[in-house]
Length: 108
Image (cartoon, rainbow, N blue to C red; front, side, top):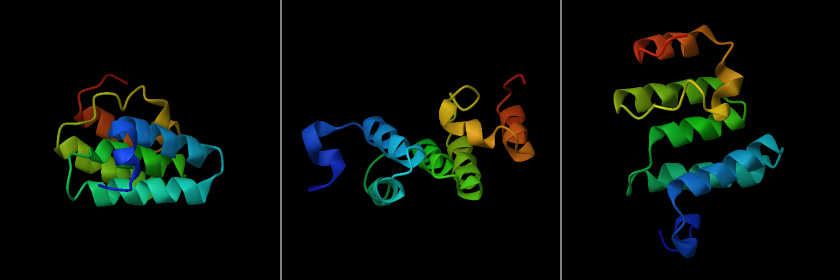
């Protein structure tokens, strides 16, 4: 992904996502949205977990999209940190999030 954040110093997708999430919660929505689009585009060519995309949507306050992407992450068995990850704090009051945790066999 030449010219993208992924190409800068070999950044790992987690670092890119963490930066994007930080932008989102800091109110820098346009910067966060740009990173989110790069993650989605990158997922077509590389292994970008839906978990990371869910975290970006959660940071942007987009609960529906976050839950949709968490479902995809669940299907791919890539949700190990969802119960404690602060990225998903905005989803903790949503019954669908708790349903997902139960399906993952995480104690509530």
